Length: 526
Image 1 (cartoon, rainbow, N blue to C red):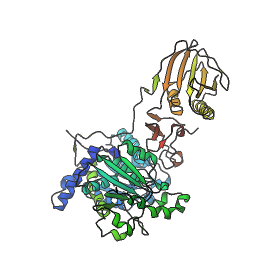
Image 2: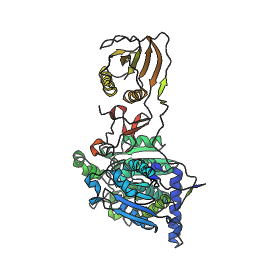
Image 3: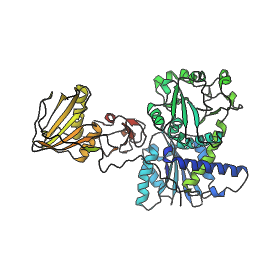
Image 4: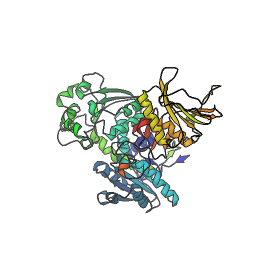
């Protein structure tokens, strides 16, 4: 059975499975070969009418022009280049309202979007998709052309295709050096998942500590099975005898740096800039790549290398057109894949509250608690929250108790709390709530405020129900939570009114939109 890709969204590279990415690369290879041989390539052209909107709220030349030309390849497509400089975005109109309006102008639309705010494509997929459902319009497709310093998945597609070409389409192994501004560069962030198309991956990260790859991306690489090494400079890297045959350079993202980092810009750049005296240390067969453009002054890859065998960046740039033609062919329904796997979603169903785990009740347990620093409150009926922030300092425990009270609004009821030592010598906190039972929603909040606590349901002076609560798989629909990334579409300062939503990955809560990881204590605004 065949399935098309219409109404799909590519917000992050992982939105396409490994099999789907390899399918795209195979189709790109076929298209390029047919074009070189001057054979018929009409099979790649979208057959049904479609509106293709190119909406670049953040300035771009290469990606924008590449997509414009790729869209014009499709003769049945009506290409609309959205003039964001004079658009409603400057009048503070919401993204959702704008894209709802554009969606209503045709039966099916594909949007290519670049923004400074992070997580916009994920938001548009959800909200504009709901608008389309309400009005009987086919859900549009969204392509992320780069959102802040988050991801640039179409750049990743053309990069991975270029790497495959370099390796004669052998995806058994890759060893790659990522060099430059790994902190702010969204193209290298996309490689954390994009490189998964290779079965064995080794990554060398070359950058001073100030602009090194964020740790949560390094952790994710290692979870993906990559072997990761770090180096402070190209000089240090070349002092080893295990250099990669693929070097991927990125420029310093000066526009995203603060004043303190800008003061160090020259020394940072020196550490990741190739010099002529390094040439003899580069092993034969190595290729240099760069998402471009290179800076006019002191580029990371000097212009004297343009005529050298190291030059892989020009082919890389040209591949952008072919990869984007094929991507639009897929989203426009021109080419289909044999039973592709379903699109990955950052979503976990938690209707059954599986993170609330029934615990064994010790016979004879009563509702009377030991004396704490703030007194005791024996109860006959109600709830006791126990093991709060166990193992932390008394100050941290007290702070957690205060946070629980504020968020769950437990100040207006008869209650008590305290801190005491447990049998193993660790401090822990408790809150006793006579004649008060927590709802499932309140317990879910509690699990994200202070996971690993225990909830005891007291009736007739005995514990009748006992639950140990873990960090839940998803946190959403709470007014008191917020992503701390100021560039996230959900951050209140951006005025888009998008509720925050977090999913659990390991022991972190990750923003569903911009994928910024948080400790559970960081998401609360109270």
